[in-house]
Image 1 (cartoon, rainbow, N blue to C red):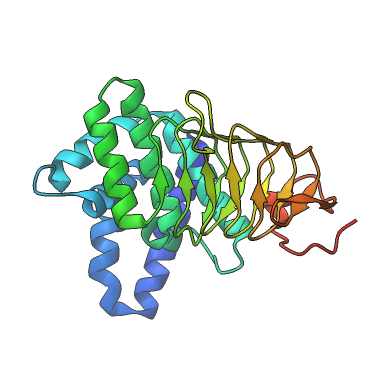
Image 2: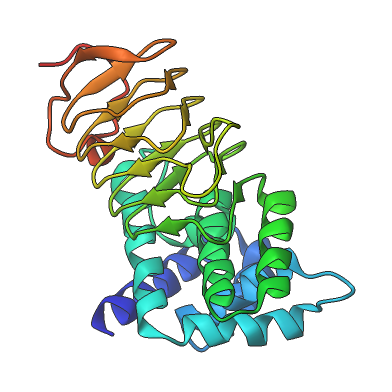
Length: 260
């Protein structure tokens, strides 16, 4: 749990620093961070407050969410997601703002909860979390979609990820992206996004296609067929236009097409 304890210590320090700069924010940080027993408690409480309804109070949701984040597997994934945002997003100067204010990060953690309860055969609750997350964060991820760690959903508004989608580790996805079906298929019908992929804003990837390891999909592209590893595609429909300048475009987050 060292990775979790270390990042929590950083979050506590960042919170104290923000309070010293903006004393009127003390009650916010006290409620959401400083009064919490750890990252699991803070994250569960933040999501519960965001997603609560009259049917599912914040107290009830926090108890359910704690069931998930009390497990090291899920908490460590959240930490790796936090680190991914700090490393890739030039607007990020630390961890606490991502934890409190990033709807892409929040939507991803809410999906992990929905996916957990879907696998536990609690479908009503899984769909409740998915529906509330879609309404609050404007990110629509089916509870059955499989998503790895180190994933950044940047800006995030309008992202749609279908039921049989697979997103591997260390992927970056920007606003307006759809991982959808063609509308003509049933069963396994959504994209498979491999490690290190960068999908730029408003790209539409449709059908059971594979986006190979280290590939890059340019903004506004419509992808209807497989993309080879370490390949850049762009256009409508998308065609090969080059190769990324690194093995993991997701970590470089370079949206330009002037590449090697």
